[in-house]
Image (tube, rainbow, N blue to C red; front, top):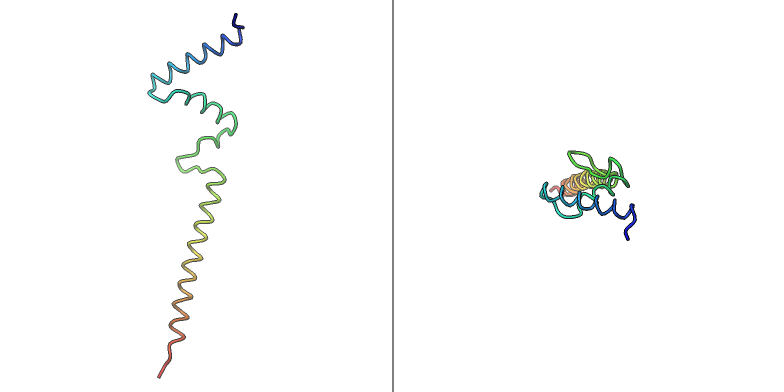
Length: 87
């Protein structure tokens, strides 16, 4: 015979399943989203301009990398101009 706790979990599972079908989302998504929110809080669902700390750091490093490439290219062009032989 099932315990009250197990029965409650079963009812909760049935309710989530019906909600997922009504919303047209995949089975198990609500449970997964609930677990992600419990683990990460507001950082669980970045978007709309909000990035996770790791994504923000990656974005900063990519921006810095692009600036360094531009500076390198400018220096290469300057070296080419100043190293031309003048008659």
